[in-house]
Length: 112
Image 1 (cartoon, rainbow, N blue to C red):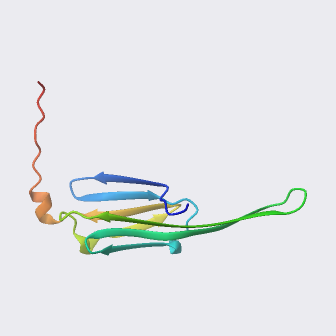
Image 2: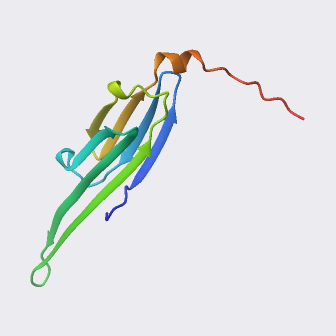
């Protein structure tokens, strides 16, 4: 994996931002999520081993670390951030502050 996240998706709803990070082959204990100095930080490591026997012995070991720091908007309530990890998918919920939800104003888009 080497210092890369497999895939990162970002979605915004009325109440929150949600980040989905694909981390295939990573165990939950190999992932760390923190909020530091206005940034969401995702880091971890992937260790694995694959063994296969064919006409003798063959083994493969791999190791990689990853790190990503994403600046957070003032609209994120940093005290209520939550993360869940299941089946190689890390989902981070970034709730919006009440003030940011109130100040959302849809702007109509008109054709030419």
